[in-house]
Image (cartoon, rainbow over all chains, first blue to last red; front, side, top):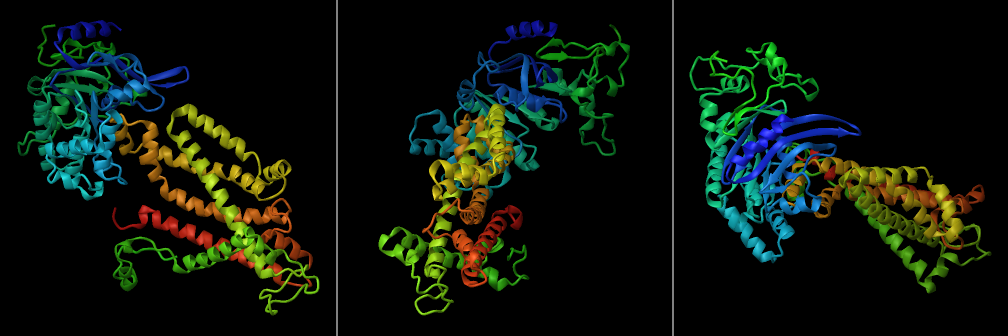
Length: 337
Length: 299
């Protein structure tokens, strides 16, 4: 693991990091055998920073997020690398340590607000449950704080909505409730796993504004997982692009979108509309490979127009956290090398 | 079995509007509820007669001068049996015994099944394997064998019957609960509670138990009805209620010997048992339809 040492060197350079992931490998473990699903993921989220993690379905984004929460499914484990939350390890934490971390130190919101709230309970009860699980406060104090947060995230008439059942709220309101619940314990880091995918575009825009505002007000770090490049472009300070279980490019948002260096990133951008009439959408041939079908060399080689014999060797990330690419033939380099 | 139609107006709107906001749900057949209410009253009278000493003679008093009296004999509306005992009181007592055994078995089976099913379905792989092992071992013992063991240990009687039926019955419910848990634990609201640091015990006691409510209610009714049949069977074989305590199974067994002489003990006891079990099963079926979200037009 040569990347591992470079990763640590990179991390040492950054100033303050709410969340750092170094050389992360996640595998399905079955008896003595294991199959990696995510390999060598190294990234950091600084204090008050919003980092976008993009990639197609099946590229390992959500697994990375679940690993940060210590909530990997049965049979899936972190087999290498480290995740640390404000200096303390998530990988080696016990279940009770993890439980005290979830909520006050790291929060998460999910893709579908329609199913993330238990339909059998009033939303207020679910919010109060989160507070009383971590803090020894009275029901009234917990209720007051929950109502405050509901108002804070823009739920109209929060005192009344507190007693609503989930089915009485719209999708946008429910996602606001989810955000308010995640923020109740004022976590330093918020992981958002495609939280706007299930919402319509106008609701999506208001949720994005909300997250921006809350980041400022609460000085919170956000890891924003999405396959929607437009959303990430609006929101994120930095972007990491994942493909087939590894990070293929990192960089500041402006640079990634203006001058992508990995052919996969280029392809993703071409797939998005630029609003010009008559210009057909681009596409990337083929599909994201299953972990069993990963190539030994560059995992993108079989879908890449630029691939040649050099690509039979697995490339390392070259560059820094602010501009890194995992490619033997990065774009925008000319043929000087 | 009436089921709700998504368009209540076309399907007999008057009936559906009469029940107001519940009109989208499957209805419980009022005949079933009425029938079971009659049984509940009869069983209650039987239980009272069984436990109040001054009344229990009504079902145990023998009168050898009045054996095999046919139904509608003055003082004996359903006739008398081979020892001249009043058949109506014997059947009321038998129903009381049936209901006690049915409820006892249902309560024990449901509690055991819930605890082990939730434990096996939500607390990791070791718990799942352990629970599956206990269930498999339980299933290896037929209820009747266990009943003989308990009859030998505790002496034949109702406690042995209840224990034997409950200790075999819970396993099937535990498997159902575990199956529900495997689906529930992947639900987003469970993950959402876990990312807030809510403990698994607390999640099981709130979010999961309430989601298990429908299947628990349906299975309770089912347990009561199967246990009533099983109790009669065990009593018929002499492993259950001991003379002079009445039980539908005992009445059937005694009546069988004199079937050519008097048909009424077997017909009345058997009929009471059959109708009771049919009503219970109809209720379970109705409840299942009512709880099934697919039977509603919207969520």
